[in-house]
Image (tube, rainbow, N blue to C red; front, top):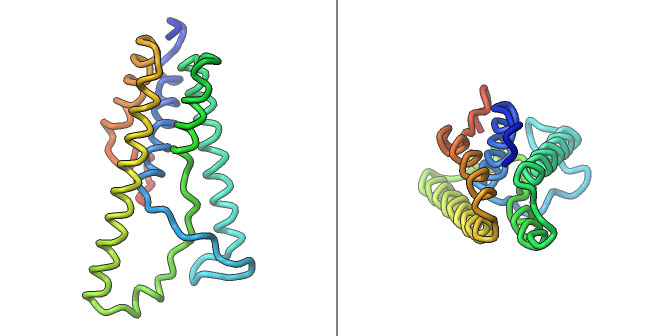
Length: 165
């Protein structure tokens, strides 16, 4: 890591790792709804814009992390595999009306299923991160450790002030 890196840059990288991991903590949703379909409370064009902004933000953070880590040409394959595994899942807005129609035991089962999906996704991303980490040099691992420590110290919310879900 270059000595010219400052705390703001490391904070930005922490946000990059955070974003990647935070998105992994969310369950992958089924394929997006058909064009023109709407979910109560959110129009599809709003959800589409939000999804696009999320993907653009993720891309910028990954590019920043790649610069800080100084990924070599020999590491490009491992980088590509890791960034692909860390891409935010395409999410479809939840239809609250569907949940309201379920009985309490059905809701419990649905929540349990969602929790299992999130856990499996976190495990998959964790394994991908370990594989990528093993491909890094000692200085790169140190830089990655610094960024990820800042992320992990903030919990699942990743320090995004005012963001709760």
